[in-house]
Image 1 (tube, rainbow, N blue to C red):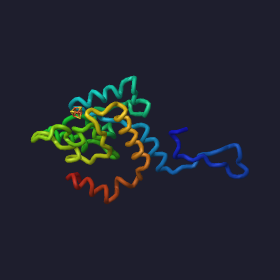
Image 2 (cartoon, rainbow, N blue to C red):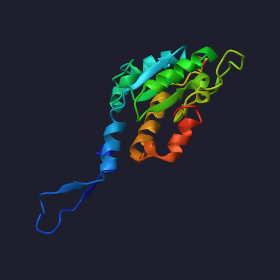
Image 3 (cartoon, rainbow, N blue to C red):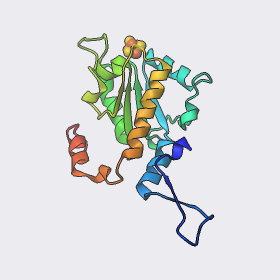
Image 4 (cartoon, rainbow, N blue to C red):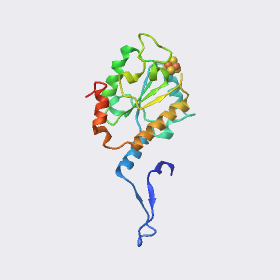
Length: 183
Ligand code: SF4
């Protein structure tokens, strides 16, 4: 029942008692379906990727959150998970992968390196993937534990459930993309 908290059980109108029905908004129903069937694309370049492998394995079992279907094709993914140190030369690759994903798409920066460059405050390392793509959730840690990665997925699920269907066509969203040079 916890997965359908947004759907309110209404009392049947007089004369229809016993039949029962659910009332919800289309937007909420779509958000609920999307949030529980995320197809992540793991973009792992170093140590944080190992923690993601643990997150997928039986002890932590990301399948419990509907995200067990990994996609290594951006065309079939809706969540880009960047894990590891991203060299400046890799920045355009991350952006290209993001561009190849269809809307709606979301991004998680997993770990200190993907979020801010981490300990690598140096000329060759991108100081956070939000320099090249918009990021929805940042997961702290070096590396983050699997519980933290799962927490990041849950935060993304909350965002998806509460996102308006009109957001992707809004001027604000287009301005956000334009600030990254994405038309
Ligand atoms: S945040 Fe730490 S564990 Fe993750 S990729 Fe960077 S150095 Fe490795």
